[in-house]
Image (tube, rainbow over all chains, first blue to last red):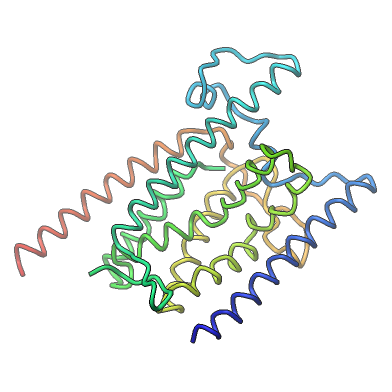
Length: 112
Length: 159
């Protein structure tokens, strides 16, 4: 049973790796040949409104020069990291409430 | 994209509402739906890559935030559970809620059919910076929680 899981796990990891490699390769190829492909996540860093700044940092005005915007990116980045970490910790706490890892079976089972 | 608080609340709300009708969507299983809703945002590991100065690998992790990549990761997570079909279904529902919310955004789009093609899809009615969606999801989740508690208490009284 564990061996079967190992095989499936290996297949899925290899498939994921190939998918990621293919995407990355095509992105580099197309970018080098003049095409512009947006990353699904890059826009998040550069498109925050004042609301987001208030939530994630102590900045109370938006700078218009490139340096200020660059500085803004990392301040909102820390806010995003903090919210994501908070969300992850909260989720893990709730997850542990209902599920536990069975070391012998190497599997996650429901708590009774 | 909507933040993790929105994704968690929307996934939990959907699972709880389905739980009124289908016993598979119990509270422990709703946690699995929430896990599925967070899988696409594992792409935020690229923040760590940026911090480590490895931004050239930023595009390598993007497929995690695409349906095919998310489903592969769901498959990997399923291997750690016993009832694999049920767990994979719950994770897939969570992934579906994530993309349903992300498709509402404008600014970029998602290559839903990768690796078949690179067309980016979006409905484009909400800004990525709009915090109102979080407030709305909090309110709906609260209402759902109150209804869930009421229904549970009623069941306990009559059982």
